[in-house]
Amino acid sequence: MTQSRLSSERPLLTIAIPTYNRSESLALLLEILAPQLDGESRVELVISDNASSDDTSAVVASFQNRGLKLIYSRNETNLGADANFVRCYEMARGEYVWIFGDDDIIVPGELQEVLRRLETRRHDLIYIRSIGFRGRYQTSATPKFSHRMRVFACPLDFALYVSVMFTFISGNIIRKAAVERIPHSDFSELIGTNLVQLSWTFTLLRANPNCACLLDNLVASRLDNSGGHSTCQVFGTNLHALVEEFFGLESQLGRAILNRTIQSWFPTAMLQDRRKPNGRYLPENPQLVLGKLYRGNFRYWLFLYPVLRLPIPLAAVWLLAGKVINRVDRLLGYPISR
Image: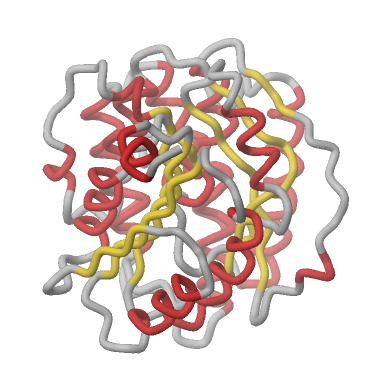
């Protein structure tokens, strides 16, 4: 097959990596990803470098010299993370697009399982579960997987399961070919929200897509990155606004995403932040920001407010009790979250 023929065909999957000044993390990702792409014609690998000032270009060149086929694009200036995400999406030619964080890992040997699922073309949105790691990822620790998939009866069930993790770029694969058939606004309109990735995900979610989840932890997510954004502003105010824009606050999908976020994700995130000497994220007042949004939602008062107000040891106990309630809620089909 000629090179021109290859370039004219649409790949099954584009893995698009936005990167900025993380050459060491990017090198680790490519080191683990390269063997999985050896001889793999179904995948297009794209790297969008946001004008890094470190040795990112040299790292990419070293992998190209070793035979890794990829498309490398370097922005003339730093466009910001959101704009670089949009750049990745626009560059992707694949039927499916997996925008992947430069400091995360596709678990060794498991890309083939992802491709096997995508080849059926039965699903439009696929969520992949992840496991956290710190420091150097240990490939020797890779467990054996069951390769189970959960198929959801409707987008509502999927939204209840995924909730705030729609924001985790490395955990979501979307069928770009399906998004292209849906009328939508310019995705760049969400630049500045730190959640621009939701523009194409939510566009597809509200179009009644077929949804599934790979139940193994096929993505390893780095836990010791520095944050650099205001948690309550991004995952409180901004997420709330985007859910209202795409679904409406009184819709089933809107309630599912926000209720699960406030009762399940925020309590853990806020307690972790309280335990850090200077906090992980930029200074803000969670009670002011989140209370303004959710004071009329009993889940805020039951699950989150005590975690914000109680002494840390008691807040930890309250969080544990909340996790038990959330587990029961999940087993019963999310009656509290709806």
